[in-house]
Image (cartoon, rainbow, N blue to C red; front, top):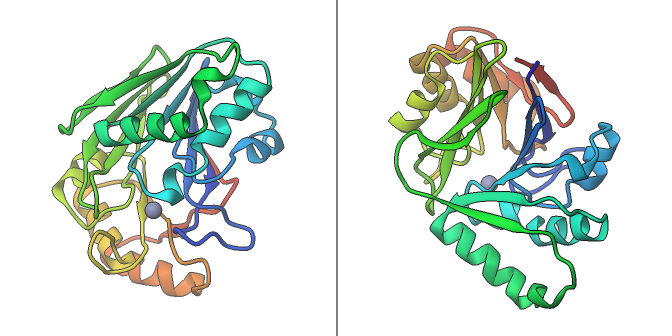
Length: 250
Ligand SMILES: [Zn+2]
């Protein structure tokens, strides 16, 4: 059985109980972390997921609320005794800058560091990211302030799919990623350049024909009903807020 676990659901300013948006896609042996704005280790442990089981890290774009925790994660896995490779995926500017960040910490001098394998994603629609017997993940460039990808994940045992818009204005790529999916996690940071309002998220979900829409990456100080009502109106069905530690079985 596949699962998407919400490790964080807040926009760039974390809430009292909500971390910056980051997710876990898990099925079989594969444990894929999507984004890393802060250390994910306490939350993984609270969920009973051994951090050493992480197989992959996908970084959607190089803004601090999505990558600032990556150096700490890489270091902590080393301190926890990791030996197996960790696969890290991102657009070229993301993988380059993460390596540059690690170079600032002189990581090449840290003894017995496990292999970190960088995979540069081309900025093309439906680029295969992870392809595994249990799950597959694809990325498409979306429309944010800097190069950014949204994701689609398919769980092979159930045939069920989900999409994560990441940070984006409404754009056809998100409709494509979410097309016919059981679940769309769509950002709703607000109607501004590079982001979407709840109403725009609802409209995208309607166009994609998804079964369920959960808003994510929202201002946690806003009223829940205000966010969901605007999205439900354009989606044409009830909408919920993604919250930290929510799990979706797919
Ligand atoms: Zn963000």
